[in-house]
Length: 503
Image (cartoon, rainbow, N blue to C red):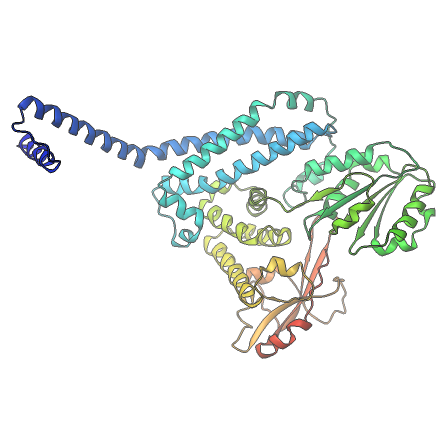
């Protein structure tokens, strides 16, 4: 009966194509039917493979990617524990770390999603708002599989070219690390910047002309870690033994610099410039340092690219971390010693939080510390929604992301989203940074931490001072005065408000 129906279908097909067949022989019909059945079976098998087979394939690729990342990470960690002076090796190390962070970004993005799907669980409704989650579901995994394959090929290429690098690495001197700083690795470590750190140390350790002090400019944007990098170099045992003394100055201090501070000692001087200075002022300072003739050196720290003109060597430029590096850092800080794959839902939410923070190093430390103390999905969603609300409010009011507002003078930031108990139809809670915070028992305003208002663990007064202190030297303190103000007066006083970045 089925064969009869198929013959009817074939006859209809031939009629529709206007083929004039007077009589279809049984042999001809059998050939056509066989071809059609074969094509239908082939299409059906392809459908099954595309629908179910890619799951196993993607899982295998992710496992392979995890294995390669482990191998690459071992080499990178070993390299970070050595003094590398070879410029070619530093360039290769940079390429290696970039490939590693890109690989981790792909694995940390799709690994948790695959675990949830493998367990037969449907992603929560909140996660469907995330771009990469929607793409994972809508593409059926094909686009994701291609991204994982590309990352695999990239890592395999990098690993194939590591033989010479590893061989040369064995000849590099090890960096001494004391057990205490290793124990506090999660909270008290300088992430990344290993290539830049090695470049700075190579310049400082070079014994050049003693009467022509080397001047190394380190230029970078607001709060990208310039001072943290310099202080990390200055705390290294080789640098401390190479220079008799290390001095840290502000830009205004060089006008009253006393050459007796460096004579006859071999001195490393760091100078942080907030604003530009005249060539005459710089030459007066530089001539005093050069007159000692003892091999002293100077590091310039600034956001201003024009100050690189005072350098005697090429400047080192610090940029924001790439999205892949920033996402990796977020996982390290937020999950601590826990494996993100053990908390796939938190890993998905954390990925979105990291994207929303837009590379802010201050924000990532504040938020990660809060999240690490509470591995609850509703809590992480609440934190994400709070920041989104604050971000959308400032974009609506001022047309800029909170991170950008903090880096400018003469602006205010709306943090009403964090203070729902104080917010009313007539009040808005604003953040106004002031002078550098000093711990004083006689302070008038109550002091709160940024983490306190994010976690919602305290009752907020009408006016208070927010304080955050870095865990890394030079232990930068950022403070802000917060309070409720009338909505009617916000517009008229907006231009009078001022934010002063103290980084």
